[in-house]
Amino acid sequence: MKRILITCGETSSEQNASILIKTILSLDSSVEVLALGSGNLEKAGAEVIFRMENYAVMGFWEVFVHLGKFIRLERELKKIIRDGDIDLFIPVDYPGLNLRLADYAKKSGKPVIYFISPQVWAWGGWRMKRIRRSVDLMAVFFPFEEELYREHGVNVLSVKHPLIEMIDSPVEPKRLPVDGAIDVLLFPGSRRQEIERMFPVLLSAAERIKKRFPNVHFKVGLAPSIDYEMIEIPDNCRGYIEVTNRGIEELKGASLVIASSGTVTLQSAVSGTPMIVIYKTSWITYLLGRLLVNVDWIAMPNILAGGRIVPELIQSDAEPSKIADEAIRFLSDSDYYMETSRALLKLRGRLSEGRDIDDLATEALKMMQGA
Image (cartoon, rainbow, N blue to C red; front, side, top):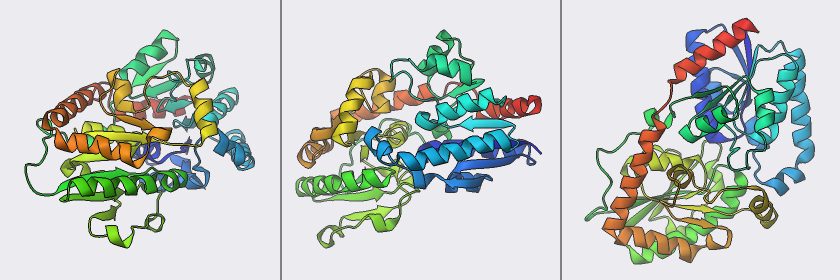
């Protein structure tokens, strides 16, 4: 029996990883998969031996505070790589842990497929030498990532983004509703820290937008790792704000998205839904990020486009009045709204490039045969 170890640290990455695992098992059901993950990987057929949600913290300072827990996790995963008869290691994004594990696996003689590239382009590319040494195959979603890895001599495979199959594309750019209710989706984040930091801000912004547009209705989209109990809607807002665990499915009918930066912004983009991207973290993490990260934008739609398509409100700018002002502009200016939707839909074509996920699954099985 062949055995895979796969390690995920974030909900959206795990969703994509579950598609890969499901595809591998459809090609060879005898493969056993051990995982750092959650419900998505369990449903795909993996045995989750470490719960991802127990390690869902974000930011430099926050990781430092929980450093002992992460050290113990890394030690246990290395033991599995060393002693667990692993035939393939698949790290998924999450570079802080996964690059060290990939290096260890490679030195232990295990083949490594890195699925979903760490954002080396944001870090100035200084991790490239390490990746070239530690990774047998880098699987990427974005065309510019493929070009970057090829330039640095890394074996790379460009894969079509699963979002293309998961989210329908409108035939033409979205338009503002002429009459009737305006549906706005709020995505406060996929980690407890993000929820605690961003949901009160979104709630206050929603109240301001409601005063300008009485027919607006809000839905708070929960990530799979977030429980309903974490979101408490005040009594005075219950008539126009509700909570759903089907936020992504709601994109088709949504007029606007207001979301914490993350994969949900890409999901919104491929649906053609205009959005406002917000982000707020601890000031220590933010200042360190400014020193270390070399990007002009944080929202993936803007990064892919190479310029501003959607507004970004970061740190002190991510406050209710500014969020509401951006939302009111979208909901008041039909030309601005439709042009934004059109620009977002152009990105969909770029994510359709690359090989099918079946090709990556086949490569994984070939690597295991040679292990």
